[in-house]
Image 1 (cartoon, rainbow, N blue to C red):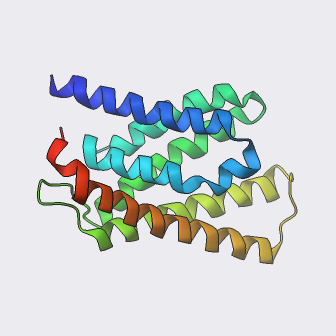
Image 2 (image 1 turned 120 degrees about the vertical axis):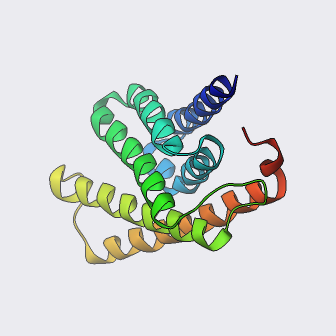
Length: 170
């Protein structure tokens, strides 16, 4: 039964990522990376090891179907984001228990993963795909927004877990 609950949570979180990517057009959806970051952090808290990677894999696949022109990139970056959330959660020793989650560790893990994925996706679109120009001011803005999103996502996910969700963990 526990595997079924974990699978349900992963499918639910992946569906939320897909719906957000499907309904919100691309320039705005990239600014809403904080929603995806909170979902991936909560996936790590609920499912445990590789929870965000699993959600990123399924969410990336579904999102790639909604954006066929950039499907491989959408899949790759969504999957990589989930993988990085898990890696940084492991590196910063973020663990979800019934006592709660260490808020500072969650913030550091989410900030690092969000800043890196934000810069990598911008760099890929600017240098490799040449959709936008590579601009130092824009690079700085992307890092600033991604870092702020990571801080917000780490705080929001740990607050939600500590206040409401720790008692219903799987």
